Length: 132
Image 1 (cartoon, rainbow, N blue to C red):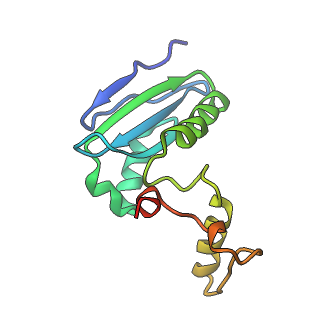
Image 2: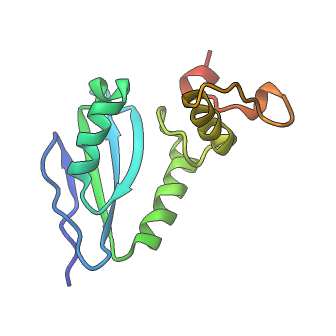
């Protein structure tokens, strides 16, 4: 089955993958700064989720979608993009992301948790915080 066509620009419906086809998408602000890299079979549904959950969504203006034949290929491309392109708002794939996610989960449970080493560098730091 052919992959959906890649797309770029303003919000549009980029299609839905079938038979395991999965998209990697990049979300940029008006100036072209990369905010987020993600993946999914239905990017528009993921974008709707982001719009409800993340404050950075208000800055989203441009979208680029690239399709892969399998979720495994897309996952590898997503992780490589996060590591090499350094999107401002991604957590997954960055150093310390596991500790960050776990700490947020523990906060939801009302518990205080710190990385086992107790070093500040083990916590997630966004691109904007690194440049300060």
